[in-house]
Image 1 (tube, one colour):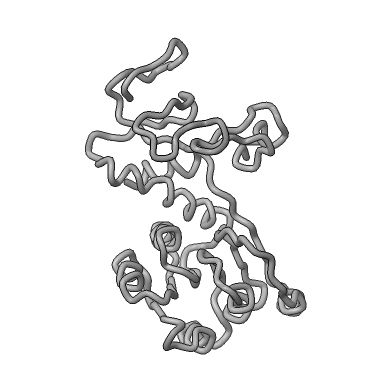
Image 2 (cartoon, one colour):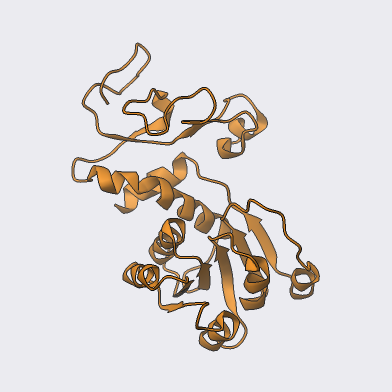
Amino acid sequence: VVSVGKQAGRFKAGDRVVVEPHIGCGSCFYCKSGRYNLCLNKRFIGVGEWIGCFAEYVVVYPSMCLKIPNTMTFEEGALMEPFSVGNHAVELAQLPPGSSTAVLGCGTIGVMTITSLVNHRVKQVIGTDVSGVKQEIALTQGASHTFNPTRDDIVSSVLNVSGGIGVDAVFITAPFPGAMDQATDICRGFGKIIIVASFVDPFLFDFRKILRREQHVIGSYMYTRKDYSYALKEY
C-alpha cells in the first residue's frame, strides 16, 4: 500500500496486501448471499473505466484487500489469484478425501487446481496437457499421473488408472475442442464435471452422454474472499 484514503479502515501505507480484482455492487441478491462473484453489476480492475491493466499504481477498495504475512513473497502473493480460481472449483465439487480426479489442462489454473485438490487430500489427481514442461510442473505439485494428448489416448489412459470406470470428478481447465466429450468419457457414472475454463466460442455437444450416466455438471466462476482466506490459511 502506497497511500490510503479517509475510509481505508485498518489499512495503512506500507501494508503488504493481495487484491481481489473484482467487486460486487453490494446490494443485489448474489452480493447479499455472499456470492458476489456472480453479481450482474460486478466491476473489474482494468476493465471499462477502472484503469489498472499494466498500470504502475491502481486504486482499489479496502474490501478488496487482504493482508499477507511478511514471510510471503510478492511472487507468492501474485499466485493467490489463480490459486483461488482453482480452489473455488474444488470447493464447489465437494469431494470427500480419497476421491479420484482428472484435470484437463495443466496451465496456471490447472496446476493451481491440482494444488488445491492435493490440499483437500484427494487420493488420485491425473493431469493432461500437450506440454511436457507443464506436465512436470503438475507432478511437482502433487499430480499422481500425467498424460499428453499428442501421444496418449486420454480416455483409455485415464480409464486404465481409475479401475475402468473413470474418475469421480473431472475439472476442465483448458477450453480445447472436444473438452466436454473427453470429460464425460473419463468421468464415472454419477460423477462430477466442473467447468473452470472460459470457452470463447460455442460448441456442439451430445447431452445424452450426461443423461445416461447421471453425471453432474458444475460451472465455476472466479472466487470469493473465502478462497483467498483459505489460501492464506494453507500458506
